[in-house]
Length: 500
Image 1: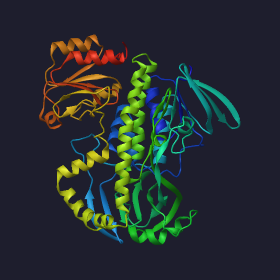
Image 2: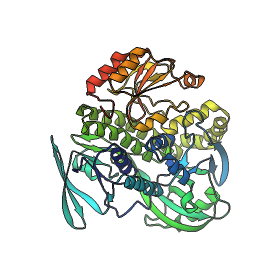
Image 3: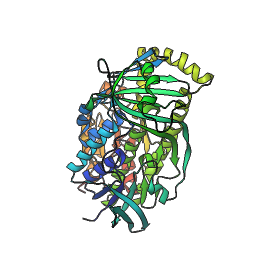
Image 4: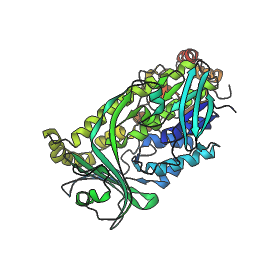
């Protein structure tokens, strides 16, 4: 069959996009200029929202079994522990995955490649995008593979090809922001003593260092800033004298070591005609909070169902406009907040010293003692608070939930989401009018008895919630208004039922 979507780049963003499209019956082709998954990958944290997406796709448990849930953050300065924040079940009641998972990006990519192969799609390695053109009928690309030039036609093209994106450059999209002055390192090492299962962080003026466990190799992943007097081509021995006392470790074996630059940038647009960019091609961030890779995966989930709908004549092409509108707002906010947080953490000024010497050591014990504070931290880091209130797909309010919010997790209400399709949820009683409207629109309707848990989650008794294929609420209908359903369907020419 003819390629419907050409994906350039087989990192986590491109792989999840390919899986989510293939699962919906879209013919995808994914290329990558590398010979295999990255070795010197930096991303370690897999947050709850990503695991919720993986549950929807059917492989969250596989990811969790290969990673390590982080049970605590240990904050150090000048070689001493100064504070500790327990993380075990920090998001209890908020998500099926109330923790932060340590799972290195290189292992992560290999798992995603296997999932994609199970869908019958192979990554085409050692293959580059040379050029492409587009018009109202599609995209024509020229690929290069081992010296051969290959023509490829597709309906859409998605650039998931990283910070140096060739797709973004070809679309002449500005990528405004900056580059941090420091040179960073990443290493896999084996340390002496009992294995570490927590996140250990050291903060100081102009430096930081992190240590997280890597289950698959029994190693520790180290990430930090290279000393200012170290040459760019340094090896691990350049950081060993400084690093070991800071983190309180003794490194016995170095598996690999690499250096890299960190940027903070957002592209001016995420879409030009039939071409899209996602992940690091669209936005890159500081390491603060481990948000970058998870945000790229969120891009992929958002874009996949919309492309599938349009390609399968289940929605008007105007639906694709909502991808940029929804994701670019969050990307801009994320880059700004992570940049400010990171700059303050390593600042030499009074603000940075206050943060490191007084605020964090006193704040961590407070957070560990107050459930509300821990819940707020989890909501912020886990990305379950990402919402699209200004989207053209969003409307209404019922209880504390407004159109665009993530569907709150209550008991088994995430189970039907594995259909990867639209559905109506009611928590309480369903009116005959809503049941009739749902049947007419071929819209699956799921109802649960009203419970205290639903009230605690912010839902409204007897309200109806139209849930999008990406587990966000499109419409919150306090009185089960059926006219709003019909209006949204008409606006985007939506066909809700996959067999309609």
